[in-house]
Amino acid sequence: MTSSVSIKDLSLDFGSVTVLKNLNLEINDGEFLVLLGSSGCGKSTLLNCIAGLLDITEGKIFIKGKNVTWEEPKDRGIGMVFQSYALYPQMTVEKNLSFGLRVAKVPQAEIDKRIARAAEILQIQPLLKRKPAELSGGQRQRVAIGRALVRDVDVFLFDEPLSNLDAKLRSELRVEIKRLHQSLKNTMIYVTHDQIEALTLADRIAIMKNGIIMQLDDPTTIYNAPRNLFVAGFIGSPSMNFLHGELVNREGRVAFATNDVIFSLDGYNAGEALGSGRKVILGVRPEHIKVNEDLGPGAEVHNATVDIEEPMGADNLLWLKHAGHTMSVRINGARRFSAGTPVKLGFDMSLASLFDAQTELRI
Image (tube, rainbow, N blue to C red; front, side, top):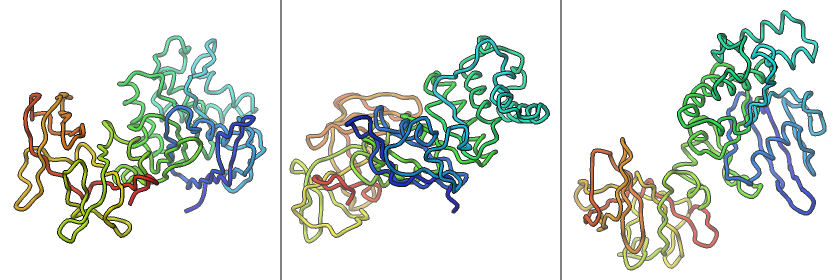
């Protein structure tokens, strides 16, 4: 695949504080890449470096094969959408969309053509004569996206564009942004701390921590095969269940033991040889645990007790006491269990994750 944005050995220091550390990233042409992480992980800082809003300490940035490391933002071929709408309040939507083009002395016929196209894609034609004060939050953010869209650039940068909106609007605009990418097929780099946005929008997700990319992969791989303990715990709501224990030999086969309870590892696809005596952490997602279901003949069954039940509509979340651990299990919302109910659990080890307790890397 052709590279659209290429970041080589990028580092950024603010005084004695290193924010980004020797970072390398290749973003394919037409790809939707999400930079995901908690506040302070460096995701917005990285986006601002790509945009040219911050001068990097070391490294190089290429956009469409051109070295733009020291280019001005206006010369990088990018369009940027910020968290705040940053619209001119005294101007109509049409004037807000055309302002940058008029400053760049783009011919009026071309301006009209680009505005008409952006308005059609974003479905804001009826809003063109209104001012920002007459628009809802979702409409203002559509206009902000439109202002980037009319620039007709190769790469779009989104810096948490939905975080100021309520949950319903976020959901609606998330669909619109995905539809926009499918329509334009431009490269899009999107910053968010919301894992739902990341999982639903991205072709690939870069999960960041302390200025380092912890894993770069497609959403399915990140969810089902996290590379390390941090990624496993960050993705998923509620988080993956973690059981601390060690590998043991049971009848000639390696198994997992925690608090005198032993789990078969049959079906687990290890990336390396497993040896007994190793301290490990077993990770199982809430939806990968079966409760009071027929597991078939010879299946391993574990006893647990319901601690708390959280009805969530389509789903029902159970918090269980098992083997000295508190575990969460997601089941169908029609199934109900009261506190104190004893239940039997089945674990699908083919969907589990095993991490080394010392390095915290996936085994």
